[in-house]
Length: 186
Ligand SMILES: C[S@@+](CC[C@H](N)C(=O)[O-])C[C@H]1O[C@@H](n2cnc3c(N)ncnc32)[C@H](O)[C@@H]1O
Picture 1 (tube, rainbow, N blue to C red):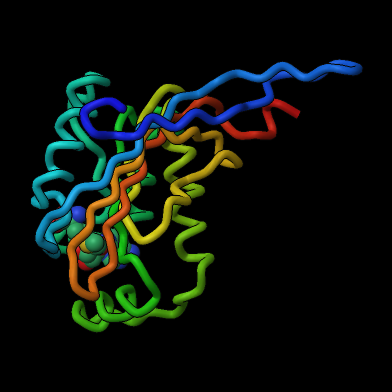
Picture 2 (picture 1 turned 90 degrees about the vertical axis):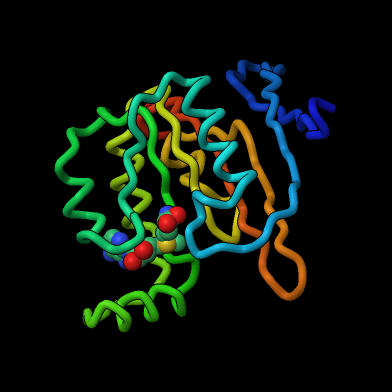
């Protein structure tokens, strides 16, 4: 235990030759805290603290934030202004469900053509491309999927923020880009 957090160990196979496999032990911090819910994700105390801690540890000057509140412009247009492999730290805080996505668009008077999972997958693909190797992405939502191994990311920390009652937890997944994509290994 570190500061009340569980340190999980996961085994990663780094190479395999005839008859044996080599494993590397990765440590991942997992923590659960309680806080009042708030539409402004980054104002929730434990989340604010997590963002500040990672920023300080990784010497991130400015976070790239494609989904700010209030809405400014389409995330894809914003992200496309960055060169590939140029972003050191990114906060991925999109609408968490097809329903939230539709409500956002309705509220903005915009027409939404697609609420399928491909919307999130497309955002993740472009975000993964823009982050530099060693760079950090913190994803917020209702799952621990993050950007994922297939996009070249490894989870370093998970923070579960419970809000009580019938509220879903806000799940914060901190990932580091270890590679351009899994294809580079094959
Ligand atoms: C979960 S909220 C982000 C809250 C924000 N991080 C904060 O702490 O105040 C999701 C935001 O994404 C915006 N949004 C929805 N679709 C978007 C899109 N295609 N491009 C950019 N922003 C979008 C919504 O307007 C909303 O402000």
